[in-house]
Image: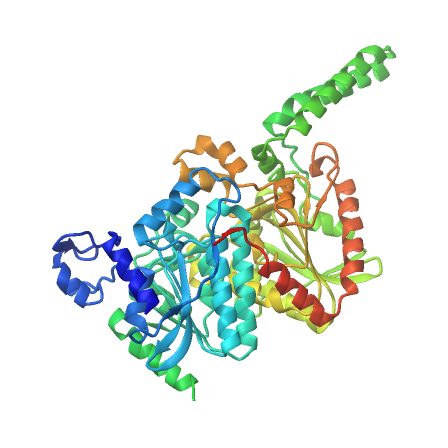
Length: 278
Length: 322
């Protein structure tokens, strides 16, 4: 309950989401149609007209994924410093806080899905692009280790278009190795790891824990990949093909198991957990 | 051997000009039987002073340029200078042979190691077949295969890092570039043999880390290691390529920076002016360290080596405790 109270406090403080501005109506990024905000919210922020999946913050994501009131947040006891005194980093951290109401780009904890106990980590694109610096790396590692301790399946939901966080230099890069080591240990212990990929997840996050689930699910139309589309265009000096690096493209190339629309993710997870847990 | 074009960086030019002048005078003195000793020693002391001034104050951006110097000794050059024997192995058994990453069985004095390294090209033609040292997924998967082989044979792994990054292209994405790298990170964290990593030139982000998780991380003095290129950083942060020098500084990518941050274990000195000035000496310096570190790592048991490695990476991160 503590966590839910906190969430509501934050909403009262004027929490803003990214794609959905305040007001009654939203113009859909996917089809350009004007959608009534109330309908959008009831539809889990998926456009009722075209199925475009809008951004969801970590807390909203947890709310629609886990059983009601089952989430207990882990206190990682760490916050971001500015280890390299990197230009503009402190300001970006504050901006991320204001935008999401979170203290960093990852929320971790445990809860239940369909009555099945799991351990969860969620990265939030709204906070510096969901990029991984020391704190995100530490939190993903803590939550993975908790799953090992409690012998529970691990679910990580990534929304990390920012990849490894540039502002912490090689320290961020090393978080890829750190989180991967924890994931490898979890797998060695015979525990299930489900990775859910959301729009967008790229770079260092994709090249570490996100792309290595035992089962990998992606929301429709999410941008997922290693190199950013702009970098690729610059390198190959030509346009990338239609649908390149989208969920459906990854499915076609054998990189993920399934593309599941937001409304069916919970029931899909329940099926998997039912299969995995006795 | 391909005739290599000598290439000079802007800050090297004044020194190179003086070097040429000295050579010219020496030649002239020999040919004409004239005495230019005074002039030569005057130029030599000027050169020495200029070298001291320039080399002692290399900016991070100048180090990036040195790390990318076309004449800098690359993996294969060093392999031939360092190893007593090297048997290259090829292919990922899944798709293809990626020449941007080389590997094989190597002997260095009494030690036998499995070697894996990025390989940049020595010429335009060579660079085209090696994709400028930017590997595709098959390169990382070949590396993965060789790591498994090392563990099976109970031999340590030695890797040389020298890449602008993993290749950002359509086919690389289609074949799972991110997954290939991530799979290596997991595998390297569990390998029950010692892993010694040496950054010899350019450590380009995830593409470097894909063969760069190890028990000891060493770096050549003028090598760089970064989460993003200074060019990429400048484009994102300032939308301006002229800020590339500032970006190089902000990223803390030099060997000294990374040593101070506790992210690498040792800096290997380079000959005066950089590794390209004397590849033989560079190789000797590296060889000495390889032998020393392998000697130490060999004493650790297979299970302990994995535990220690886990703890080491587990501890990386700088936070405010809240």
